[in-house]
Length: 193
Image (tube, rainbow, N blue to C red):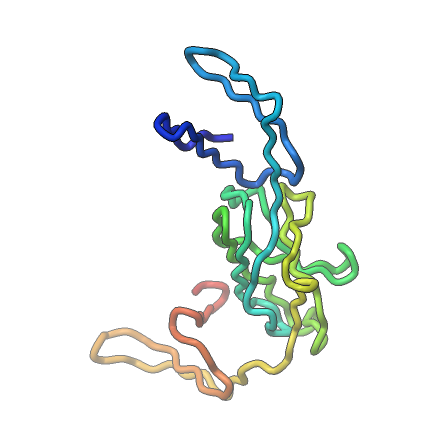
């Protein structure tokens, strides 16, 4: 636990306690000059929950970027707060690879699936954020459902074009059903963006 600030005038202490297991904790305060402060009645209740997430529908081929808002996430991206879309308990769970994490928001990208692995149309899973890899965060939305859909953009052609003005090759992707902006859309070739 990290003490972030102490305000002597208001007699308050701000503590960051991200990623803690849910529960009620007893609090002990030790002052460098006076020693242990009487804290027999001091407790802190910690909980974590998903407040919202978007989108709640994504491609049967995976790859959807999820933004999950909530409380008490651990900002340690490597080991804590893994995210999955689960179907029947842990069986067949689909990982959502965490890209960014903060105490109140996580972004992750669902695993990309091959044709053989793709989910069936309208298959529904539950978005689960785990605390310290073992405890599920509570979900404020009913069930935190995520639905896989085959109603996705269709590509009709991919063409390379030479941009003489900028002296670079560009790739033109044509098709139907494209939405979003250059900030929300990405193109990868052999796994390279």
